[in-house]
Length: 339
Image 1 (cartoon, rainbow, N blue to C red):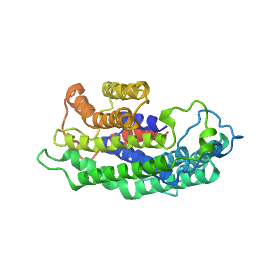
Image 2 (image 1 turned 120 degrees about the horizontal axis):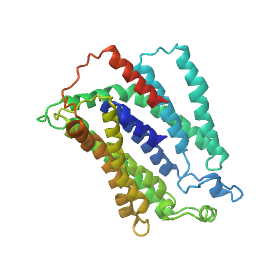
Image 3 (image 1 turned 135 degrees about the vertical axis):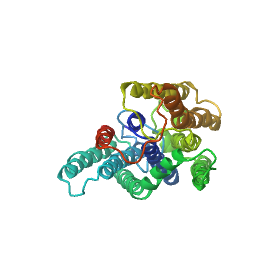
Image 4 (image 1 turned 90 degrees about the vertical axis):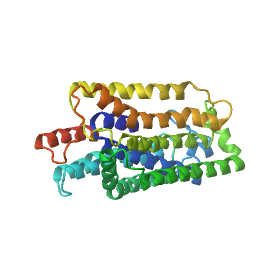
C-alpha cells in the first residue's frame, strides 16, 4: 500500500501534494525505526519456541508494529486530506460512514492480523496504532498547509533566490536521524541479544535480516525525501508547473518515467549480496537507490516531463483561480488516491 500510494500520487497529484505524501511516509518511517531500535523489544516467537509465525517471519525488533503504524497513518492522513481538499464538514454523513464503516474496521483488522500471525504482541500493536494516529494528525494539522505552500513558493521562485532556512532544517533532521538510528543500533551490536532469541529464529534468516539491521535497513528509505527536497529547490525558476495535464499522453509519460526510475534502484536492492561489511551494503543497496529515486522523481522526471515530453509546450505557471471544471477533475484524482 505504501509503494502503491506513492506510485498513484506521482501519476495523479500536484508536486506539492506529492511531496507532502512523501514527507508523511518518511516521518512515519523515522518514528517507527527510531522507536524500534530504542525499545529493542522481541517478537512473540523470539521468546516462545512454541509460537510459529505464519508467512514470512522477520528478525527486526517488534515495538511498535510497523504495519499497524503505517495502516493507521496512511488511512487517516488520506481521509483528513480529502476532507480538507473538498471542504467537507465533519458532520457530513457520507464522510463519517466511510470513516466508521471502512477505515476504522480496515485499520483494526490489519492490526489484529499482526497478532494472529504471531509476529507482534498486543501492546506493540496498540503502540503502533497510537503512533500512526499521532503522525497522521500532526502531519495534517501542523505540517500540511505550510509544507505544501512552501513547495508551491519554491516552484514559483526565481533562480537567483538562495536556499531557504528550511534547507538547513532538512540537513539537521537528516543528521539527527542518522545519529538516532546508528547509536541504538551500535548499542545493540555491543550488548547483543539473548541466545534464546537467535535459537528461536527461522532457519531462512540471512545477514540482511539480522537483529536490528532490518530496522536500520528500512531507515535508509527516509533519505528519498531529503534528496527530493533538494530536487524541488533545483526546479525553481525553470517554469515547472505545480499542476499537471490530464491528457492520456502525459499520464502515460509519467507512468513510463516513474517505472524507469524505479527499475535500477530495485534491481540493485534485489541483486546485491549482503555478505561482507554491512555499512557499505546499507549505502549501496538502500541509501543510494532511495536517494536516487527522490532526486529523479522530484527533479529529473519533472524536467523531462514538462520540458521534453510535454508536446503542448505550455510552461507558464497556472493562476490560483481555477475553474470549476478543473476543481472537479482534481476532486476525481484525489478520490482515486483515497481509494
